[in-house]
Length: 266
Image 1 (cartoon, rainbow, N blue to C red):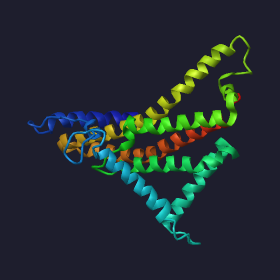
Image 2 (image 1 turned 135 degrees about the horizontal axis):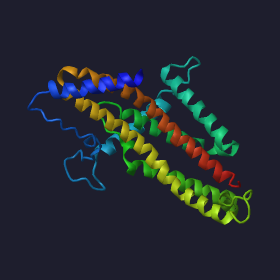
Image 3 (image 1 turned 90 degrees about the horizontal axis):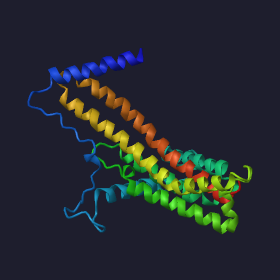
Image 4 (image 1 turned 30 degrees about the vertical axis):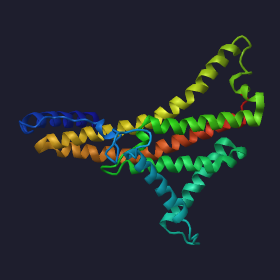
């Protein structure tokens, strides 16, 4: 039944586009234009330019500060909304770090908490109309993933020394297979920052591109424009959920990588 409704709605969208769209209107939808980096000062985009990325990254930091510092500064016995959200988030991430990375990983809780809050705020700010989604850019997510990769690797060698290499040696496997598995484990380890960054940027970018496509249809389909509007509402609700899930996935993977650094043996 659900599939039938989908195909009927899709057919109505196509038919309405043919019959009721203005004849002079061209259906020119450019969903990727929203990800263009632009200078806010009107000059060229270079290393020292203040761009829309700079602005929305700064706003994400400000929002984290307002929620976690200003919002919980009163420390009331009966917390307000901001303090409740801050305390719930704190407890949620602390429990995650403790459960996944173990007691040894709790000392890295401030770093992991900062990662989660920054990505979450950047994702939510990107859902504001006419805003810029910084986490849709691989340049941003690659830096975050790279920092996690180098931090975890350094921690692994500092804490375990050469024993950290035990992460790549599957001692439970047959001896003949261990060198092959070691190569596979080594490759997968260095692929981590790539998958870590692309997963976040790709999911955020895809959702925003779909929203832009449906918005373009809504502006061009005339009488039946309400169909894409319904789709936009549904996709937007999904994007709110994705904004949280992607921040959560990035953070829990960080905890998993940290656990491997702290306890590298298979």
